[in-house]
Picture (tube, rainbow, N blue to C red):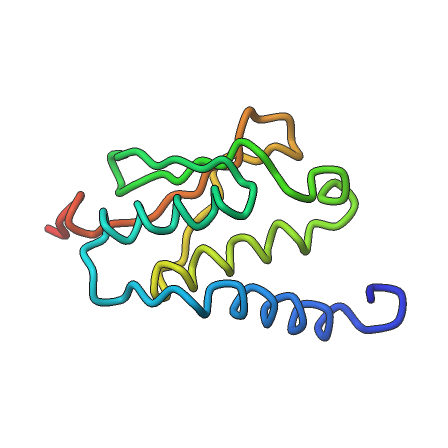
Length: 121
């Protein structure tokens, strides 16, 4: 795909894949910890070996197995697809990747911000 299409079109395709993967799980009306449990279960069923934990800024989702580990180093678009999929699964909350297996970290970790963790003063 990358050889035949411009980067923008590749991103659109991968965003569509992420949305399609997340389409069967509508968690928008559940509290965030319930959504996190469901997202972790979904990711684990997809081969990611996921877990979540509380963090000062919100929550962290960790994935310690990448289904496309051997491709991700040369195709970072796949990692961006994961961010988009997690965002879709969480109902539009955009995570921030804070660790990355491609860079030698033990897991990919995604910070899920929760404004209630640090109220605005």
